[in-house]
Image (cartoon, rainbow, N blue to C red; front, side):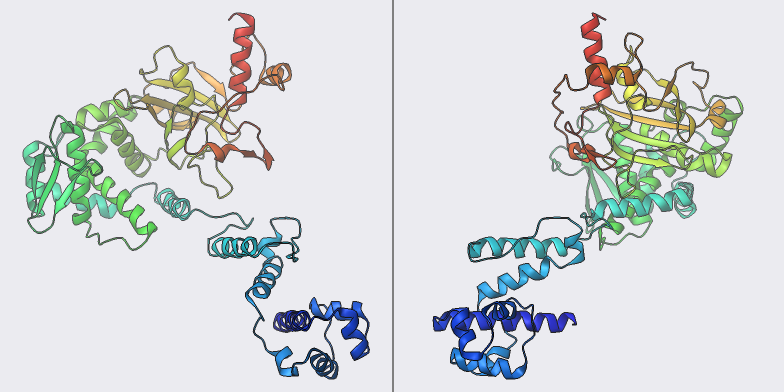
Length: 487
């Protein structure tokens, strides 16, 4: 029987029940008149049996209606329509995949409950879903697509480097060191803009561009330091230099953000000047985002981005980048060196928590959180070196981490560190291993997770529910061990 036939039988059954109840008859009474059993009529009303047309005519006569009344494809009432919708939704393979118990929309289930169910189901069906039936976040999907492209291109965008070089030439850049304030103003003028610092900037905007008067407004220096202002101005100009239009969807919006920020970095740390500087540093085993930051007067994060833009393309050095909060929750990530970022079911690291033994977490346990933290980490995918910087002027504090695989670590300052940890293993308390700590303390503690946006992303691991989502239990066990031992 086709789905269409199944639907017709369902409507027929509901219409037969509707007219029988309107006539005040029982199944047995109708069965006596048409010569069939009450159980068979029940099967017909439930849409489970297909009656002969002659029997349909007999049933109609017994109910005081015509056969056309019974065969009308319209549900006889809103209640009947809701019951049919609930039955149909539970046959949907995506719904079946949720493994929920069957819900029978019997007379005891109120109409408003059924209304809620079908409305929520419709909204659920209109949401993009993954293979497991779970809702897919379109922003995460767009980020994943963009991240994959960045990886394929080694995070190097030749067309944006060329646009930046053209802007620098128009602004009269001398070819060495950071661009001057005069050069910045001339670059803005090249695109027909002036830069104005104002005191009354909207709190939600880092810049406002008046397209009619061709003016870019940014906050006064007491609100936005010069280094940050340069980046904001150039990322704003990037939209015009790269001929961006109003974004039509989330993919285009995210791409434009990445491209405009890339443009800002390519102007502030020009490829022509940065590559020779980086090559010399790599040959000396002294590559450092800190030096790039100071030489070109950019933020530490922009310096690491420029390393990620240029090192693979020009020096064949694979890299990875992370921005995380103090709990190790990822807000930005990039890699082409194979480092095994934690990912969700969609393969995205966004909102996931890196292991407690990784640099972005260890830096907050170090003696000086705001000193550069170097370490090697042994993972299932190999050994990786990284350097982590905590932004002292940002609250809450974030960690910016950049690294490479073990084979290329020798090119970087800090590669001589003796700090080496194993991913996923406890750093040890009182000489106990992570498994020993778990055996000692599991079931004897009740931690409460800090509130944060991605706390529920850690709720499951390998399909198992974590009773304390967002809490790193190995840390809790180590904490308890320290206090129990008086360490």
